[in-house]
Amino acid sequence: GQNIDQPTEMTATEGAIVQINCTYQTSGFNGLFWYQQHAGEAPTFLSYNVLDGLEEKGRFSSFLSRSKGYSYLLLKELQMKDSASYLCAVSGLGGYNKLIFGAGTRLAVHP
Amino acid sequence: GAVVSQHPSWVICKSGTSVKIECRSLDFQATTMFWYRQFPKQSLMLMATSNEGSKATYEQGVEKDKFLINHASLTLSTLTVTSAHPEDSSFYICSARDTDRGLDGYTFGSGTRLTVV
Image (cartoon, rainbow over all chains, first blue to last red; front, side, top):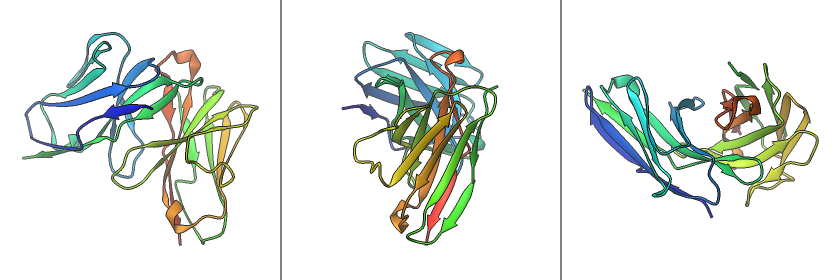
């Protein structure tokens, strides 16, 4: 089976830094994605990692270690609007490069 | 950039009726589309993989006779929820893969909120 695990909920303070972890055990791997999703909306693409290391994009960074089956999303200078669910997803599963999601982490940013 | 149009955005239907949801890739050809379902406070659960010109591949536990998928062209996939019941009320989202964009080329539709009364 496929296992993609991430914490259910996290809270953080405006202006701070938060790290959301994701571990995975999957039968295939073509890359790991992070998405942001606000309630009632479609997910928004944040990052994609296929090689080990850190990818930085503005206030958001994502790290991948394939040997450890581990990734994290780092959010800096948190803003209230960053309150959302953050979804970790793995692609490359099955013959059609299926994209499978973890349960998501609900992040609440407070003043 | 790649755009996927999903309609309707929301729909309310009576129990026992059928509802069709459309997913179109507007500026690229998508040989593969994915259909997800999301219940409140839960993540996206893959229901099926839609392939142009062939039968859809359903995930374990998803009733293929209840959730009919048709991918008749390279730009259109439809999901029909047949004989809908209140427990089918959910947020349905499609995703199309633009293979020209490489391994990260997944684009999501805006989702359809289905309420069965």
